[in-house]
Amino acid sequence: MKQEEPGTLKSYHYKLKAMELLFYLFQSLSKRETSAYQKMSESDIKSVYKVRDKIVSSLDKPSTIAELKQIAGMNELKMRTLFTQIFGMGIYDYYQHLRMKEAARLLRDEKLSVSEAGYQMGFENLSHFSRVFEKHIGKRPKKYSSELK
Image 1 (tube, rainbow, N blue to C red):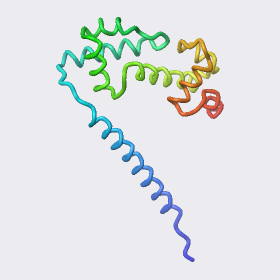
Image 2 (image 1 turned 90 degrees about the horizontal axis):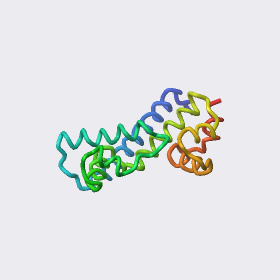
Image 3 (image 1 turned 135 degrees about the vertical axis):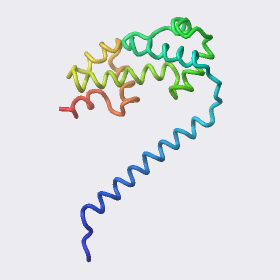
Image 4 (image 1 turned 180 degrees about the vertical axis):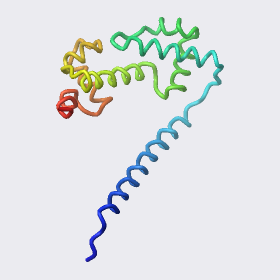
């Protein structure tokens, strides 16, 4: 039996992983095709980015929809529709996603404890923080931080 060169199996693995990533990309794009698009002006786009900037600037405390509507200068339905169209997820989901990425960064780079990271991200209930973290990152925060050591 002829033994396969070690590099050959590795190249198949990378090709398979690249195909898997392409599959997920096309799957995500196909979901976006089903949603109706609204025409956007340049000022609409700038307004939605101002909303995003406000969300990013206060990850520990969520902004109210009233505040975001005022920043955007548009009604709630239009703001939500355009936000989802531009960023691929709703305002609250986007906020939670950024929040969990920041919590992961605090655990990884700042070496904070799980409770410190949770409190810094504005959570009062640490079990809720753990559930949200696991939903977005794929692991419980304790396990995530222990794997970094």
